[in-house]
Image (spheres, rainbow, N blue to C red):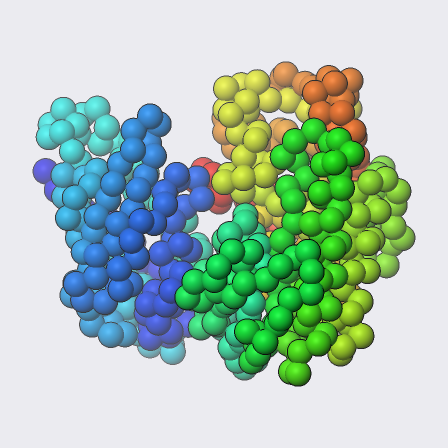
Length: 456
């Protein structure tokens, strides 16, 4: 039995621009929902005629491989992908792009598929699979629409050649496909031998930046994971050095270039402000105290060589970045899904957060906005307390949140890190992003969680 699913998206751009977005490198990455454990094994030749794409998916204990072949390629108008082998008994997906009469376009996704296992498969899993298909295309259409709108907003600025450190990290792996689908060129800066589309750099010493001649911008996202292990003296030094020394090395190298890039976007963190109770903080607020505040101050100061060389420098102070792939939200999902979640400490401490899409979107905005420089808070306009965060996550997951973690238990488990990451209160506002017209994709917590977890 064949199931048919069709969904239309009214595009914020022309049909051709939307087709071009799908044809560029990174489109597949942008369309894979973050809650799915999917990796790309072979990208083939994109959506071109005869291109074969291979995906690997983990479904519980199972590892599935999905091979699809593209055909029906009509530039600017249509393409199809048909399953060669994979989890469905059959799958055929037609993408159609048409003008709608007002200068913009309409994307129609028409899918015909068969659930595996015949009648028994339909009875046992048909409803579940149908819901998964609907949820996936809700995510895909929201992401497509938001990406196209963001690129259209800066269309007059033109495209850039951007070098990125930390490109394989949580933010970098979202940022790179966001940029490439917009027509920008990306060079990844790596600490190993460079492959195509990459350049080697050494974060521990000044390096020869001649390989970066001609680039327009650099985005620096490299840094040791601050929550990877309990803080010891050695771990804290690695955290500090990976940010401060690596940034200084990069900036000194950029400053020596004959034609330096026009802009450097360098990651920082709202740890700069320290523990400030319920005080509303903006970019003009003073630095706080403690290890993370000291690191953030030094981190931002390390960009001085680039600034002195006339490069526009933006220090993006990121809040808690939400993604089911990694970071705080990823660590919370299992206990909360099992009904074992609850507030931490008093629950009154403010958590200033930002969705992974808005984290990448803020970088894109900073690259394209000449009036931005210096510190910029990369946080949602709606910070919440830990108790509010807990209730929202429980509501989205449909689980109770009645198992609190007392402050002493957090300190016992994590030591100094508990006070800095879980118990500190930092109520930060994105004043500069708001001033320069950044439009948040997920401005409120529940909207962000439902988008990221497929619970729309």
